[in-house]
Image 1 (cartoon, rainbow, N blue to C red):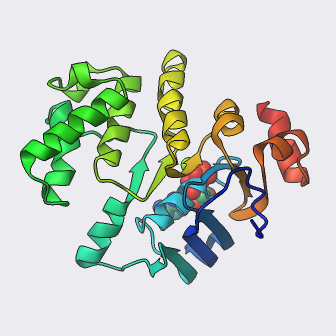
Image 2 (image 1 turned 180 degrees about the vertical axis):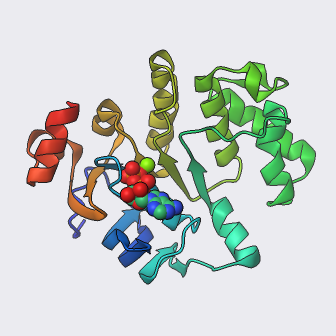
Length: 254
Ligand code: ADP
Ligand code: MG
């Protein structure tokens, strides 16, 4: 690679590209000249203090938020503003949040088949077969007929991951997917994410789970006050942070 990503693996071409992206909430400059390129198959972990703009970054990539200046492309295409194209973008960019956001009145299986049938126009039988495969992959296939409330938090989050994958996204965004979980359930979700990373999925992951970052990330991006302050391989970032902000942050969490 000729770029500065410091990636350890052979990576594909640029998939998600942000150039000089700026966003405000009123007077608050929440994203400051963000430049970030995520390649096909790359796993980027975003860390930084609370309020540094990590969630806003994810939401902007998925166009859940607007931005005022700069440019964002996914697979070389600009983000659509509305309509069918926007729905397709949302399907192409999978997103898993801290709160699992499953449809509470639908079964686990229905949660995973709904999008593919409605948005991707998949045949119900094919969607069901695929959903069962995915539920098996995340280890919740035995719960397929249950409702979300009958599952543990860790199981629900694994269903949320399966539901996103069912749309065959080109990139997956995770915004603190384990922050709302009881400690004993964190690893079962991280394990699913680690396997997904190893399978070649392009991933942008906001997390404070440094074990995951060390194991699965090609690159760590450190944000503070709305800016990308530093980025490096996990190895370099954790052992040799450059900026005072990163040193200070790591001292608090490690
Ligand atoms: P992080 O995910 O790193 O904790 P966020 O992206 O959630 O940070 O928030 C970045 C900053 O933007 C914070 O100061 C937060 O209070 C502010 N913010 C987030 N969402 C909104 C919103 N919808 N309206 C106004 N301010 C917001
Ligand atoms: Mg956040």
